[in-house]
Structures are given as structure tokens and as C-alpha cells.
Length: 427
Image 1 (cartoon, rainbow, N blue to C red):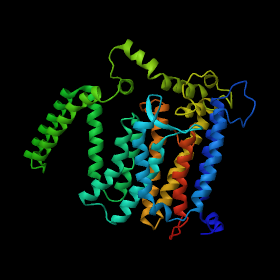
Image 2: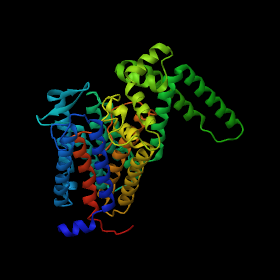
Image 3: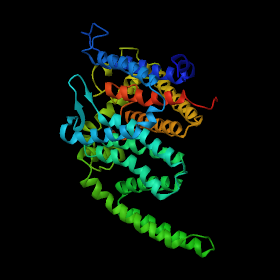
Image 4: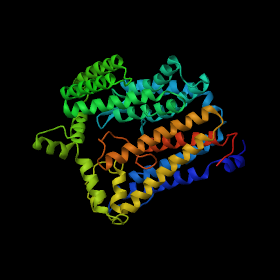
């Protein structure tokens, strides 16, 4: 495909939104790291300068992606997946520890996080497997293999420990649902999460009482000629109680203290006001200051480089995971609404592009991209405004991080390259 043909067929709306997010993100990184002694806008020794450098690298990567043959990504998806799994294993020997997680390789001029590469590789490998079996994935064997593709990188990342990155991989399950996995499994997942949270909040005894009452109610309905399968339900109740009994063990022995503190703060598990306040001032400090920064911006915001909380370094790591709070303080509700609208339009547009693909691999990979971007967007903004616990997930195209920006760009533009080869014109 010629360069002129690619320029004609690429989805320019998506490109425009991508560039808008990158530019807005960089301006807020500049603002959140600005000091009065800064002179040069293009000083590559500063954080905003380094991010600008990687914006340039990402633009070069886009040109490379567009120059490669469209079937390259499907043909080498398995090889890329294998390489990314080896790179994750290598962290246990050669990894660099940052912020308590051994998730990085130090390359001298930059730190490389292989989980970012693994996200792209896993999305490609999953799309390749699902397109190869050419079925609605009704067979248990197919379901198991597809889930293993997702589970392997997640299990390699959890011990680093980096539960936030591991959680992103589980979002790819939605690709399998799009391709025909029964919603029954999704219901099991949500039910397990509900039991987990309910057990933490109220304890296994109250969960057991609630389930017993439900079983009695259903038995009473059965006596009135309602068709309720009591025996299978009783088995489900028994397994649910066993799962509930395991929750406290997992919470106290598998989770690290910082993770337990975040759940305690989020669910208000700690009953001692003094200890809860201590947790709020330590683990919950970032979120508390982030909420205050956004609140202080009001409707219009304080203006570019005028954020007092941003200038005063009230929010730790504000240029990375908490960059959205800079938008809230300096650009107010109008700024945060603009960012939310841009991300929403981007995701809706990608859904439209995925649905118009005639090639199964392209469609499935498109939904992989959507799943990864959606969970990053949803969790990052949720934790910044305090409705979700802090788990360290950046905002795509926005948060500071050279490797993150580069791999999010590659993730997106591989799909845009696949889209240029579509056989079905629509929209």
C-alpha cells in the first residue's frame, strides 16, 4: 500500500484525538514540573523535555508502523508474545526496583517496563488465536487456551508486585466475550468480586447468613410451583461460603500491607478513627490532595501555571498517575470535562472502527486496544477523584513516562494500520 493510499485511508479523527491528548498531556506535565528557575522549553534534562523527546520518538514509531506490511502484525504475533513473556521472566533476575516494584529494566538513558510491551503482544496473540480457531468459542478447550494467553503475563506481573498492570490484562477477557464467550462467566466474575468486597466489609458470618436466607427464600418459592433448581443452588451457596472463608486469608497473607491499607481506606474497613486518619495521611494522602486540587479549580480553573497546589507539590507523583488533578486545578471543570469527552469519543470511535473490520484478526485486536485503553482511563480517573483505590495505573497518552507513551502509541497505531486495509467501507 502506497504512502498516499495510507494517508487517504487512515482514520484522521482518531489521529486528531490522539494528538490532542498528547499535547494537552504534555502541557500539564510541563505545568506540574515547572519551577521558576526553568528557562528552556526544550531542555531534555527536565521531565517535560524528556517527555517531548519521547513524543518525537512516538511519531517516528508511527511512521515505522505505517510502513510495515499489514500482515506483519498477524504473522509475528506469536513471536512477539514469546519475546514479551521472556522479558517479563527476566525481571526476576535483571529487573530494577522502582517504588517497591521490580517492573523495569534500566537501559541507561531510560527505564523500560516490559509489561507495556506485553500488553500489545497479548492483544495481538489473543486476536491471532481467536481468528485462527474461527468459532464462536463455545468449546471449553478454546475458552481455556484463550484465557491462558491472558493469564500467563498477569501471573508473571503480580509477584513483581504490580497488581495494577496485572489487572489490565484481565480486561482483555472482554474481547473473548465479544467473540461469543457466554455471559455466564462474566456473571461469575462480578459475583466473585461482590462476595470478596462484601466479606471484607461485613465478614463471612453475615455473608453466610445472607446466602442461607436466600436459599430458604428460593425453597419457599419452589413450593409455590416456581421452577427453582434448589440442589444446584445449594452447591453454589456452599462454594460461595468456602470462597468467602478464603477471602480473609488472601487479604491478610497474600496482599501486602500497602494494598491492605488502600482497601481499608476505600471500603472504610478500619474502625479505629485514629488509625483510619493515619492511613488517610499516608496511603490516602495522594488521593486526598488530588481531590483538593481538583476541587480548588472550580468551574474555570486557576489558569495555566497558576495552580497553587500544583506549584506547592501538594500532590506526590502529580506528573504521572495523578496528572488529571493538574487539569482539574488549572483548567477547572471545563478542562476535566474536555479530557473526559476526548477519551470517550476516542473509545466510541475505536468501537466503530472495530465493527467495520471484515478481517477477524483486525476486529479482535481492535477490541483488545479498546479494552486496554478503557480500563486505564476508567481506573486512573477513578482513583484520582477518590472513587477507586490507588493501584498505580497511568492515563494513556497523558501521564509522564516515555516507554508508556511509546507503547500506547504503538498499541493504537497498529490498529489504525490494520484499519487502512479494511475491505468494507462504512461510516
